[in-house]
Length: 480
Image (cartoon, rainbow, N blue to C red; front, side, top):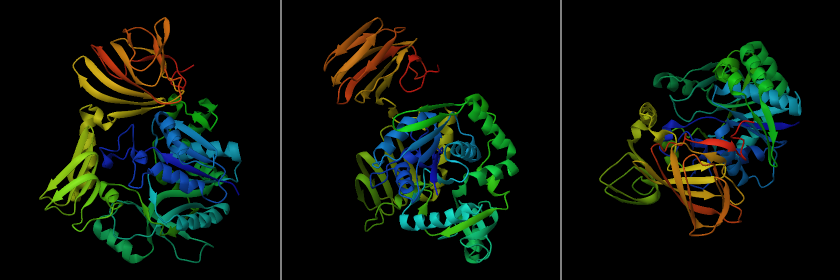
């Protein structure tokens, strides 16, 4: 039986700011072992029995970043499919789009395993065993969710109330889903023994989920079906891609798959499991991945401490020192530092809200920004000027573009560049440069086999990233 894992990669992870940002969200955060969450999710899915393809539903701006991360771990060259959303419309839309696409590609008997891109599962063998049980139930027409055995009375998760054992050949029938409880209620749930954390992972036969969506969320299914009719498909050497039409996708109801389907259907079962699951929902959860020293401190990077205990520091780029403090979270990035008490780890999201209200770019971008062709790092930003370090991957090319309000001076630091500058095309070697006036079409390409590194000096009355007109692009950023 064909199994297609569907990885949903749409969350921002605002409680993990300043590392997690909208253009570099939580699934791309590197963990202490060097891998990030989306790589771990891909590998965990790819190793399952019967997997023929991994499908990812994500924002279209994250396609090439996701492809790069998968490319580092997809050693078996497993087939990949992408559904690219112009903006988020919650999980019901994502699941419906994936089910419709898989029905067309693999048929109604194929099974889809819905996974979140930003969860950590540390017992992969137990996870594989739980998926095998879920697959058996899915083949019989059940919508299966994975219930996590609660380790403590958590108030930040929703719960699943399960029925009695023996009603199903595997797992338990679901009696109801319950919202995040208060502490007293959570304690009662843990004591009862038949309540489980709702992991947000699901397994179902494609035909079954389409039937149930038609019965319980027909508005979602109809709107997504219309979107797919208006959307465009493309194929690259390593993957296929469905880019959803923005106008019709905007009409899809914004609702979770839990509310739209799972809470309404009578065909829902759960597989209780203990798989070392964590949603990595705060810096406290991240800190648990690092071993504590004798004083209870957990450090990532170069850190010195005196008279300090029970702190977590993540500071990869520079030396950090603690003196006489305890129970703190210190997260240092090149352009922002977070200092929070551990008891208030969940409140970091309010800082992100303030940044958005002020239109501060620190909620959206890092100092180094990833693009399909490479990266750029803002080195200095002043009145009427900005200095960037640009790295272009071998064989990659920026779009043919123009700026209304700024001129640019490019100086090659290493590698070789082919530059279109207005009507001229020229080759630049190390320590050579060119000046591009505002209003002139220009393009940058790396024809070599090593990274092209250059310094860009911008000058003008407006230096925003939205001052760009694209005429040609290798990465689908220009509409035909």
